[in-house]
Length: 95
Image 1 (cartoon, rainbow, N blue to C red):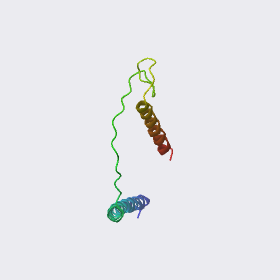
Image 2 (cartoon, rainbow, N blue to C red):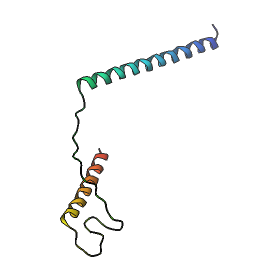
Image 3 (tube, rainbow, N blue to C red):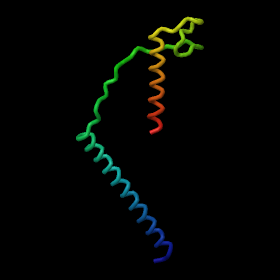
C-alpha cells in the first residue's frame, strides 16, 4: 500500500468515526430531551395581566406631561413598576 492510499484510508476512517459520533450524540440528546420533558415538566407560571402604561413624549415618570401639575398616585405607581421591571431585567441579564 502506498503512502497516498494509507492517507486516504486514514482520512475516510476518521470522517466515518466523527460522523458516527455526531449521529450518536444527536440520538442521545433527543432521547434525554424526551425523558426530561416527561419526568420533569416545566411548571407553568401564571402572569397577572396589567393595564398598559402609555407615557406621553417629553414627560418623565411621575409627571403628567401637562406643565407643572403634580402627578397622581397611580402615575407615580406606574413609574415605580416600570423602574422595578427594568431593574429586574437588568439583574436577570447579569446572571
